[in-house]
Structure formats: C-alpha cells, structure tokens
Image (tube, rainbow, N blue to C red; front, side, top):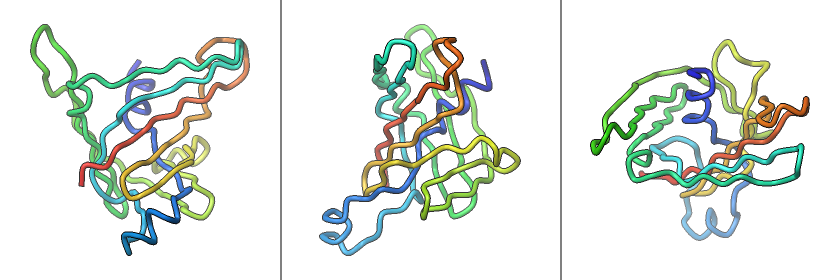
Length: 148
C-alpha cells in the first residue's frame, strides 16, 4: 500500500507547456515550486473507462515542493473530523524536460511522464501499474496546481 500511496502523492510531473501562457508572462514554466494534487484520473484498459477522483480539502493540504534536485512532500489525511499530517518525505529526482521523463533516484526504470507543464498547472502520468488486473498497464494521471 505504501508503494501505491507514495507515487500517488508524487506522481504528477512532465513538459508540454502552453506557449501563450509562458510568452504572456515572460516567465518559463517549471516544475520548481510548491504544488498540490487537484484531481487524479485512472484510465482502465480493460473497459476503456476513466475513473476520476477529486482531492478533498484535507488532501489538498498535502504539498510537493520541487527544488532543482529534490522533492519534499508533506501528506495529510482525514482522521475522524480532523485533518492530520501523516508523512513527510524528501527524495532526489531527475527531470528531463526535453522528453518529459521524471524519475526518482534509484528508480530509473520506473519513470513518470510530465505531459503538461504551464506556469500554474502540471499533469504527470504513471504508466507502471495495472489497476484493473487485465495484464495491461493502465494510466494514472495526476493534475497538479501550483501554490507558489
């Protein structure tokens, strides 16, 4: 479960940017900064259906701060009527903006793909898991919003 939970929190990062947004602002889109996951989508290959999950207010408190080499993630979860901090993790990563590949140190064979990256939005795809058990890898997309 921990293997599924951690990538769920972090997976969401790649590089197709909106040229209009980048040009109008004079800034370049970057993963560097603080983000939260707004929603997740799982494309299930067995029935070609998309399952959408929106983050709760408590889950939106979970943040992922990307520096040039590390991501610092703080997770929150609902416990009865209280939103509580559950985990804090720092991991080294590599991001190849040219092809959108993102991977954690020691996990080069399990890349994520940043398929959208603008000044305020990022979509990261996890293509490594078979959620529906049909023997074909499914696609988990995480939609990030930039906090700062």
